[in-house]
Length: 168
Ligand code: QAP
Ligand code: CO
Image 1 (spheres, helix red, strand yellow):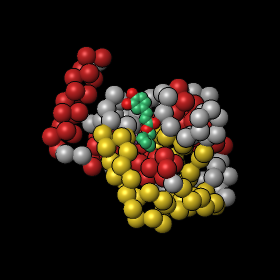
Image 2 (cartoon, protein in one colour):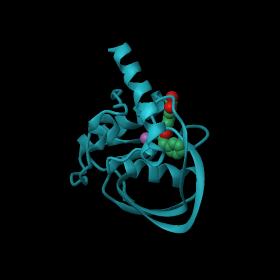
Image 3 (cartoon, helix red, strand yellow):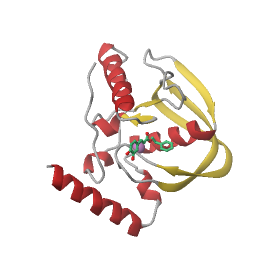
Image 4 (tube, helix red, strand yellow):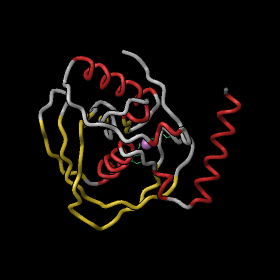
C-alpha cells in the first residue's frame, strides 16, 4: 500500500470534474486501498479521488468511532429524502486547519456501486449524510469553502498560499 499526496486549496486541479468509473479491476482495488490508507493517515473521515489528483468518481468514508469501518462509494449519487437543513462545522483534508459552518439536507438516499461493481443503496443521516454530500461535491470540482462568503474564502486562500510558499 502507499500514501497518496493530497492537493490543497486553491490548487486548480481540485476544480476538475471527475469521470465515472467503468473498469472494476485490480488497479481500482489498489487505488481504493491507497485512498483508505491515506484518509486514515491524515486523520480524515472522508476522501474523494479528486483530492489525490485522480479524476474518477470514487469516495471513501469512515465515520465510525473505532476507525475500522471504511465504506467505498463508486459513481455515487444521492437524492434528498428530508429537505430540512442541518448546520455543521465542516473541514476538509484539502483545506487543512480551517472549519466553517455549512448547511446541507439532513437525510439522503445514496446510490453507488462497490469496488466489485455491485450496486447498493444506503439511507444516510447525521455525519454520514453530510460527508457524502461534501465528497460528491469534490467529484464535481466543488469545495466547502464555495458555500461561505468570498471574504472568508479569500482569507483562507491567502493563509494557505502563504503556508505553501513557506513549505516550498
Ligand atoms: C469531510 O473532512 C467532512 O483541517 C471530511 O487539519 C467534514 O475528513 C465531512 C481534517 C465535516 C463531514 C463533516 C481537516 C483533518 C479532516 C483538517 C475531513 C485537518 C485535519 C477533514
Ligand atoms: Co473535502
